[in-house]
Image (tube, rainbow, N blue to C red; front, side, top):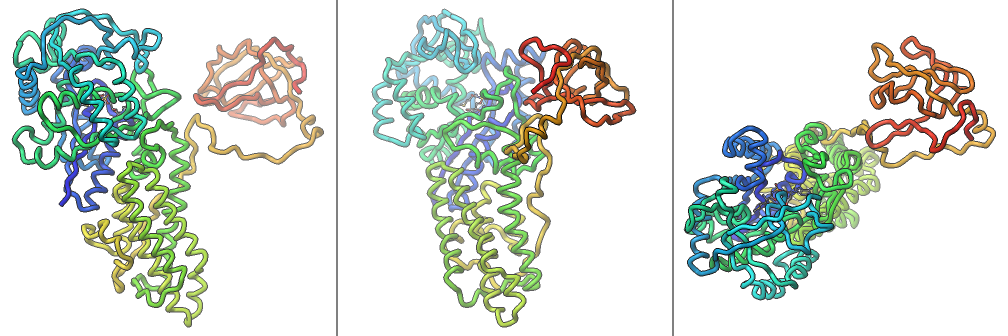
Length: 628
Ligand code: MSP
């Protein structure tokens, strides 16, 4: 049996989990589930990174001890993963005794080999990155990731002779083209290695930081958090003597985002080399989820919380969206409207409809019994062949980490099946008793295609896959593996199918503040029609809230004469913000009463990202003049 080992970064406990963390962990879960389906024995590690400056500071800010603080936040991550249907085998914490022992063991090994020395160093230290940045890494003297100016720190410390391994690392990366992938990140590391590699400062004096693992050879120092954290991947499989280490370490695949490429692509392989440990197999690097035009972070205040989305839209839809929307390796923009778009189009329309139509027909025309396929026609065979090919190609896409392409392929199969229904029109066949055999053949093809689809989507949407399998009358899911998609016809005739509830109800509502995906184009109007509108420059003379309404404001507006206008902008503007503003008023709108107040016109406004924006002029305009 083949083995494979997946890791996620261990997340800092200085912040609560957000969709960035959820994405990497869901990707690892999708991979882990897929390779299980492919017959591999897998091991999946995730956990939390709990030492270092950042965590000590966050604990101080929260008024807790570092340990109590780390316990609390680590628990949030630990509790989150099962709710996202993550099936990791071990959750590691760097504050575990087992991990501390392994870190000290490796430090001692490297020290004894002469690759750790004591020296003095001054450098630009970024607290956010928890590492010294080189001059070249700075943009306008600031850390490009955190936008903050690093602090210049000069102190005596222990150093790892990383520079010694520079040429060896370049050779290794060049001779193992997929050691770091996708290629853009391999190139990035190679580009970085064109400049001389500095030695790595691997300690922090206790006078500055207590929250870390003590160096085994000097009690006045603790271990630098990255040297400590990277080693979790070894502790996780019981290095040095555990069976898992022998079995899984040689097939280790790390998953990370590009923010931590350097520690994983440079520090980590050289550390392993110095400790005499073979290297990991692959470093798989993805891009960022961008929210409101920047990477998510606490300081930018653009955090998207996975649980909230899951509660609102359902777990499988959320998992599907993350994997479908991001091309692994590139950045992607997160928006709720894109999520809703995918739910409605791909899940409700394409997949949901296919399942519901097929099961409805099976109940209606076959009393829920899986028929014998009988004689097949060309179109039937085409559908079967396409399904077999999709299963094969999906496996290839997984090998390339091209999850979105795997999903595109699976959706091609779904779409083909939907078209097949339209083309075969089983409802017509059902009317003619002479066509019973044809009807059986068509419905068998459709039910079997659903079996294929359920297996193929199961790593991405495990619950949905089980729901489909249950509807198909499959009680034991353990046989529904990739090997069962090597041949067409796995669904046994005679079995009973039963239609379930809609898998993905359509979402009608549009998220607050977001624009519609596509603007509907209204019909054209004539100049005459436009001129019927009496648009006027208005000056807001007074504004007040309307009692009993949290939406409406009552305005007094000068448009050459005085008008009372009721506007639904109370959630976005305070009355005092409006007084004195020059606005545009549709002055000949039929008056209407709102909350007992007669509105004699309507002000123009746009829907912005954060709510309603009232239209104004960019230069002084005279109250009462016409707007054209
Ligand atoms: N503790 C270190 C990792 C040590 S691993 C030995 C760390 N922790 S972190 O909490 O900052 O997590 C960083 C990781 O979280 C990224 O590499 C990525 O996996 C995930 N993401 C955090 N923000 C992200 C986005 N905006 N987009 C995508 N993934 C992101 O670094």
